[in-house]
Every structure is written in C-alpha cells, then in structure tokens.
Amino acid sequence: MVNADKAQPSDSTVMQWPIELLRGIAALMVVFAHYWGLAGVKAGLFVYFITGVDLFFVISGYVFAPYFFGKTLHPQSFFIKRFFRIYPLYACSLLIYVFLKFSTSQEAKYLVTHLFLLYTTESREIAFYYNQAYWSLPVEIEFYLFLPALAYIARLKGGLFVMVALALVLHCVIAFFSPTDMRMANNFLAFSVHLPGLLIEFLLGVIAWQISRNELTARARFLMIFAGAALWVIAAWVFSFYFARGGDNAVMENDVLRGNIGLFAALAFMPIVAALGRFGQRAPPWLRIVSVWLGNLSFGIYLFHNAAPQILNLCGVIAPPVVFAALCIILTFLIAQVLYVWVENPSRNYGRAVAS
Image (tube, rainbow, N blue to C red; front, side):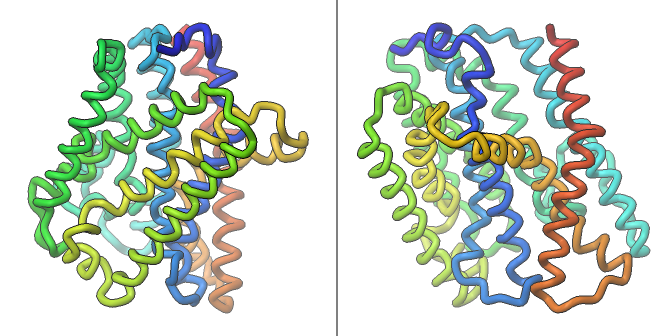
C-alpha cells in the first residue's frame, strides 16, 4: 500500500498545475454546456459538456485520495478549511442571484433552504431556482463530511475494493429505479444527486491517484489519455443522439443511459486525471501559470456563469448570439477574478490560518 505521508508530504505536492488546469477545463465545460443555446449553435456534443461537473468530482477524489492511503486527517481543521474554501464565495454568489431575482420583479424564494444548501433534498425546481450549477455543491460537501469515515474504511484490508464495489452497486440500483420522466421525482432521483448515487465518481478519483503513483512512461500516459478521451467522445455521441431525439426524457427512457451519464464520463476522466496528475515540472512556465490561474478561478466561473447573461440583459446589452455569448464569458471571468481577489482567496487564507 502507498504511504501517503511519505509520497505526498505537503498539500503543495497534491495541488499540482495539471490538476488546476483540469479544474479550469471542468468549469469551462459547464459554461459551454449552458452557453451553446445562448450562442445560437447546434447542441451536438456540447450538451455532454455538462459532465464537467463529474470531472470536478473525480478531481476531488484525486486531491483527497492521500487520506485514503495513510495521510493524517485532522477533522476539525479539515472542516474549517473546507468551509472557508466554499461557503463565503457561495454566499456571495447567492446574494447576486437574489439581487437578480429582485431586479427582474421575481420573488426571492427558498432562501433558508439555499443558505443551508438543502435545496437538492426537495425538488428540481427549488434546486435550480437561483442557479442550476448549485446542485453539485451539497454532494461535494457530503463527500467532505464523510471523508474521515471513508478514509478509515479504505485503510482496512480490502476496504477500498469493497467500498468501490458497494458504491458501484448502489449507484446502479439508484439509476435503475430512477423515474423515466424528469418531472416524476422520487426518492431514487433524489439519491442520484447525493453521495449514495455519486460516491463512485469520487472513488474513481481515488483510484486515479493510486494509479498515478506508479512511474508511468510517456507511452502509457498517452494511451491513458487517448483511451479516456475516446470513451468520453463515444459517450458524448450516444448521449447527444438521444438528446436530439427528445431531450432529457429521451435519455431517461433508455435503461443504460438513465442515471449513468455522469458515471460514463467519470470513467473516461479517471485515466486522464491519472495520466496528468503527476506531470510536475514537465511544462513551460507559461502553461503552469495559466493552469494555476484557471484553477483559481474555476469555482467562481462555475458559480457565476449563469449570472452573466442575466446581468447583461439587465444592462440592456443587445448583440448577435455568438457575440453575446462571448461577452458573457468575458464577464464571467471578470466577476470570478474580482471576487477571487476580494472574497475567495482571502477567505481561504483565513480558513487556513484559523485551522492551523
């Protein structure tokens, strides 16, 4: 078994530039998934770009995988750092979306539910009321909350294997019994967006970390990236084919696709993350700088990209679809950059100081 304390003595070796680059790519995938209609282009494979969220899950599993293999975890300091890493910027974004509701004469409902990130426990309407992208935050937090227990189980003999097998079976059961119509919510649909349905995707990131500990040759890395990309393209083509026939309901009516869209993407991302995770210094300085910058802004991009079109509409901006979408991307980056400097980075540093 890998000794994580020896393999990765500090967080700085975990948060490498390739992982930051993948964070940025994940955020941009979600942006493009939501902007293709805005830009007036055909959906095509763009609809499958929504699986950037699943790339985030795999990355989270990868980043926190050392705790599964022996790295010391201090729950109190860990939870403090996670809180200040996520909640201040989330709360700031919620204020912006509430303001946008008021500005368009809409009611600011479900505030308490959103303040406590409980919106995915009720309905799709409530979860998407302010920002569609919010749905993934509760399960991310659930992963953090259960991380000490998961790490303990993983360190038992055969613990990780059993956990992966059970998570996969649980996911398949939830997917199979989920409704074929998105409007017919049931408990299985609710479970599908929480840890019971998504734990397997985080654990795929843990497996990617374990694979990356090996001394991979350049050929092996290339084959892993190629295999992952090919699997993703195949899954994207199948998904887009059914989506074009009847939207989400056409996808949900297929027994293989229903509930498994994210899992197929996560399986594709796993070898890519494993291959890129330990590139270290194997890149020109400019690429490392851009990668870290994109990684730093990824959370802000994810949270605010759905606000950008509303803000431009509120300001009366009128432009051709492609130009309007481009302006939305620029505004998203601007908001993410400003709030990274003013809110996200200071709160993260404060959390680290308090935790230490």
